[in-house]
Image 1 (cartoon, rainbow, N blue to C red):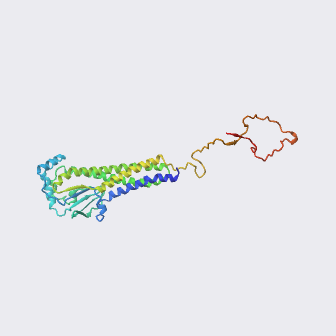
Image 2 (cartoon, rainbow, N blue to C red):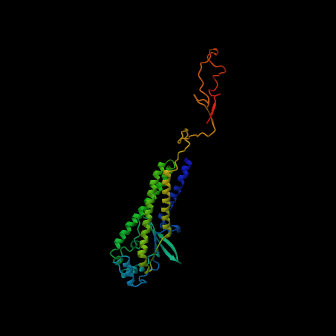
Image 3 (cartoon, rainbow, N blue to C red):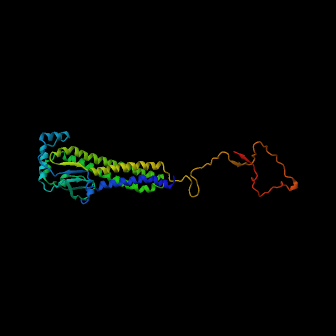
Length: 337
């Protein structure tokens, strides 16, 4: 397979790698621009506070049993009610908050339609601290929080930091993979190096996607049911999770095809180079019923080897009718192969 075949072999994983990069970029652009409806629909989780109330729809006993079911033993229903009562009185709260990779956005809800009004400034290793976002750090509201709140926030901060780093490494590795893809056209060594970065990009893309999915799924399952009784609803964004898992699928497919390009699709021509140096030996097989001239010492079948006699002296040491300029095999007999 020549250069044209090599280019065709590299084209598929190259396109898949670009598709994976585009999906990762969409994940990173979520919740970064309030004026873009497309980017506003890219969020990991939305916290809806429109119908917040301090009086839960369930009894105190039911709420406490629900908290114990999820292992939250140092929180009482009264603690939750007191905290939400102070939040309800805060007029600066937005109707909803959306959490992205670099920051968050907030806005209002009217006629069941969300309208993003503001997005935070992008920040590396971002994590959503509700009391910091709502400006309640200096308030005595934290006195109502359980003792395990700080521990939970530390875990959430550490996991969010790892998730951000994983997405960043996946983004950089994918770009390097695209750059090295040019060199993969020239040789299998280029494909080998590209495959290494393709593996790195796939591992970190998958790790980031798994972390984000598990993290916000736990939040929704553990806190969503409890807070729903107080008019707070949690929902996970479908678009951003579709983008991140599409990035994983494209990255995996690209890795498979890059690996295939290492083993196959050589860029060398089997017919030789410009100096006519063939890379593969071509042997011509003789077809049946062909004729070839007899070599030295060969005679037709059924004939005896003639005896060698010296030329007669009368002709000056030469046989008559002999032309020395004629081809040596002009009248040579042929044999059947």
